[in-house]
Length: 335
View: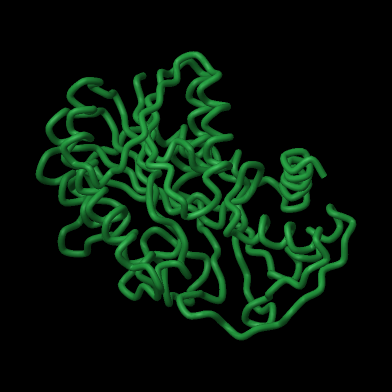
């Protein structure tokens, strides 16, 4: 296939592009290379991709609708994987405009491209954050997601609603992927694995929110990519059993679906830190802090739907994934 991967210089985007290229797909990657975090890391990821046959790159912002539509017209993609977004829960508290521009306006432009130049499948990144204030665990795709606790979460729920409208109106097969706390080599500097590793190796204090009483369904990057690729190969179709009198949020009369991709094993934050201490051989100095605005106490993915359709569900143990991350981190920073 010829696949458009947006956010190709990002953490998941780089790994996904590598996997698609390895199996023989042609990948056109776009990214605006913004400075939300160190642009040098994005360029280093991009350099890896540009060394591979079958990959082409254009620096582009999803908010530039005219240019994006021209790209769709020129390339005639078979499929699109939209990973480009303004990420981060806490950043949304101080820079809401970035989320409106990228996650809302940018996503409309992706949908318009798929409408005017039809693709076999649009797969897009949603987030576990859409479950918001829900306390019933594990989180199931059939759960209501009506109470987001951050603008980032609200933007991701909005993406799912927008995708459904285009699936219904224009027959575009769309699949939303609710990722759960992704970590691994080439990860983002604003996420726990990188933040903690950086400060621990410098002998600095790490900030532990909610006094360590958080649980996260940490999911290793290779498992995320495997889930994305398998779902990409199963275009969404209307659910013949959909009941309009008792509608289920995770299916539809339209070619629309959503899936959790998570490790199905929530880990206490203090256990995460202890495991990181073991793989780094360093003891963390911890500053216990209260809950941050926009955070949730626990995430936990129900992955039954993913397993039923694809035969796959993430299962990389935390110790294995963190060891791989720590080895990469030391190599990348020449420590």
